[in-house]
Image 1 (cartoon, rainbow, N blue to C red):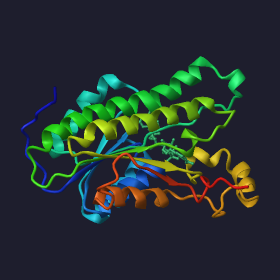
Image 2 (image 1 turned 90 degrees about the horizontal axis):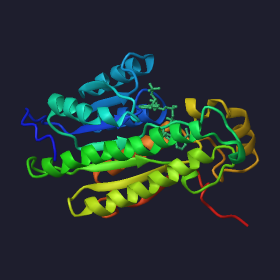
Image 3 (image 1 turned 90 degrees about the vertical axis):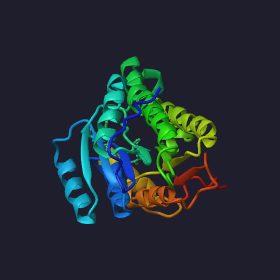
Image 4 (image 1 turned 180 degrees about the vertical axis):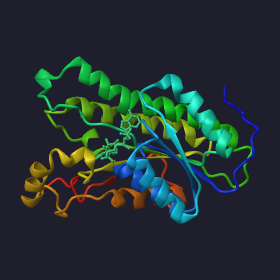
Length: 267
Ligand SMILES: NC(=O)c1ccc[n+]([C@@H]2O[C@H](COP(=O)([O-])OP(=O)(O)OC[C@H]3O[C@@H](n4cnc5c(N)ncnc54)[C@H](OP(=O)(O)O)[C@@H]3O)[C@@H](O)[C@H]2O)c1
């Protein structure tokens, strides 16, 4: 059952980005605005310095900006939020499931708490999966009502979907789960003409990693990352723009790892 909202349809394509107020999500939203997408930007609050910065950057591109407040883990609000976006724009062409968090405290897996595990699962896995489900249902309907419609869904996971960190197991497990969710959506939605990709960032310089900056500076200097630098949010947003543009139209379900070579198995 979809919302089937017969509202005025935007001429321009529309991108919905979760976790858009800072870091990777903000860069992705600005990148997609520059590509000609009107933007619906989701974060827990619409009233933040980050959202103001984003609004100003999107305005520079000439694209429209619609800030939406949603805690992605509150699945009961998803339907309302999708409805609001469709009321505003009439269409959703691209969804970037980017919102995500690290554990509040790094604890050895032997000391991991259920509270932290549940928090990570709800924000990093359950929220994005059910939000993508709601949007995908609308995309299935929209594809029969918009000429030239080319819907794309991107899941931002992490190298932690495959690499272990014994002090943040719940993060690794949530991202491994999201990686599988991306594959399952890609499989199911291929018959609907909706392309689904996983973008798997490595170590990216954002608020999320600021607390462990010294640790990673040292590891990077010691050669952990073959390309010997921090990733930047723009490394990710350029990849997402390319996926949205349709440059990878025969590659649904593919994992794009953007990690400076962290995935190379070395002897
Ligand atoms: N930085 C890295 O090294 C790295 C590496 C691999 C993967 N990633 C993944 O990339 C994504 C973005 O990370 P980042 O480094 O850009 O993080 P960040 O700088 O901490 O930004 C996180 C974004 O998510 C939003 N957010 C947090 N909790 C939310 C919730 N419950 N509901 C809705 N929005 C929420 C935040 O907005 P508000 O606080 O305003 O709500 C913010 O916009 C995450 O999924 C992360 O796991 C990051």
